[in-house]
Amino acid sequence: MLLLLIYGYNASQRANPNPAVNPVDRIVKQQRTVTAKNPDLHVNALSFSSFKLEVPTGATSVNLHGNFTASGGLTNDVEVFVMSENDFVNWQNRHEAKTFYNSGKVTVGTINVNLPADAGTYYLVFNNRFAILAQKTVLVDAALTYYQ
Image 1 (tube, rainbow, N blue to C red):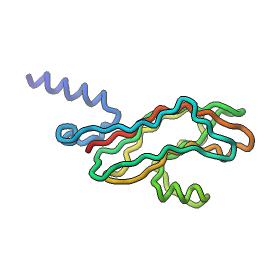
Image 2: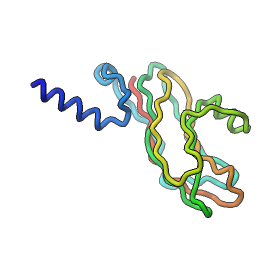
Image 3: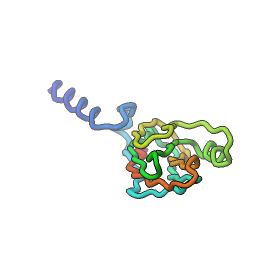
Image 4: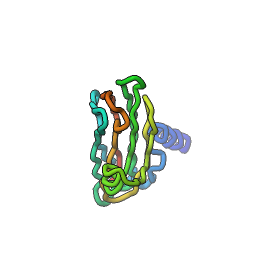
């Protein structure tokens, strides 16, 4: 019986994209998921697109995970950031901003970011401000998960 419990626990650990989840949360709270998915997110030259992600009061084990692929222009690249609402406002106005995730200029990437517990607003940003002429198309498949 003990071996069966150990096997089941190990299998659940492998299936979970956020291994930092508190085991108690899995038992006493319900997992919630908010998707940020778009098969054809168009990001104009000298611009950006974003997803607003709301984390409610009482949320724990908050994790944003997924992947993206950029195409367009000569280099098929985009910059991806995850940041708080205040930092997003600063970033939009070209001021210094802290990020939870910064991909740099890439064609493909994987996001796996633990965010602070409890209420907050975060932004998943796809930046193309550096491209003067080229619009980019980004395939996005990401999810925000938390326990509440």
